[in-house]
Length: 167
Length: 244
Image 1 (cartoon, each protein chain N blue to C red):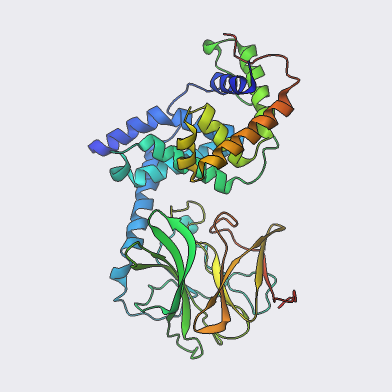
Image 2: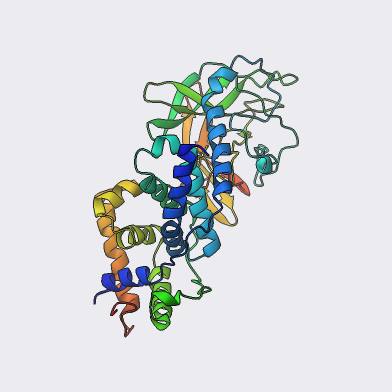
């Protein structure tokens, strides 16, 4: 295997888990999420000689997020809980509660709002980088984040517990 | 704990730690295929010396994947409300012809390149009244034009009133980074063109051709209509709101 290919395999193994999780948070559908993540990885490999020396993770993330925003126009109507949570990482009840919480929280947002939420709170990107990756203005990121959080406040005000937050 | 803390905690708590769910061999195989297709596009200029027999509905430089090859550009009638698949069509290389009239900017960018549309001369056997074809191309920062897709009529007249052939991104399942927006032209006083897919309606962007004010070039921005998505129907209206 060529050196570049070996690097790509290593990259996929390291990055695919979080990318797929991000895609799932944005689509609420495992199949769509895997499709989006795989599409992004295919495009990354197609440009691997160019992007491998730069920041392949950021490149793949940007391709995937924009692919979902552009193509996944349907709102999340269902946010299926079809996986058994990983027990070794903590209390199962906490994770189930967290999934329900996310179901409500993200289901109320638009595709772009979900993208910004995922970039801000899963990848911990600063607002300026979110703006660059989504090719929107900083003001758009700020206002969209604000609207998204306002929706969260409205939808989640009655939830009594903080999922997974007290560990 | 506020909602952002809750959100962050919930996102982290639900993140699976399994790795390697993807078939890397498949990803690399598809990536190589995509890379080859991009090279074909970039190498389009090399194909221009090929003698062109413009009998096809469209000339597609991007070679679709084998499983996508049944996806051909659609043809429409002059008063079409329903889009039908073409009955004829063969991919041919685009002609090495200079633009006729203005190269129309779209504002759609792929890095330094911009999506543009322009007409070129074509020669269609058995259709002497078809003399122009519409190109979806890209203009680089240096002004160089690259042909991605050429669409032209294969019968009748290229100036008959109504819609003419539509051009679609051929790679409908795995879009390249610079997909061709759905596009075409209409002959007549259209000021608004609306396409429909699955009951949803979307406005096309319009521009008049510099060489013939009756010719209206239209395209659907990729954020409005996913490239490669087939239209169910397309309609045009004039400035007075009359359907054409």
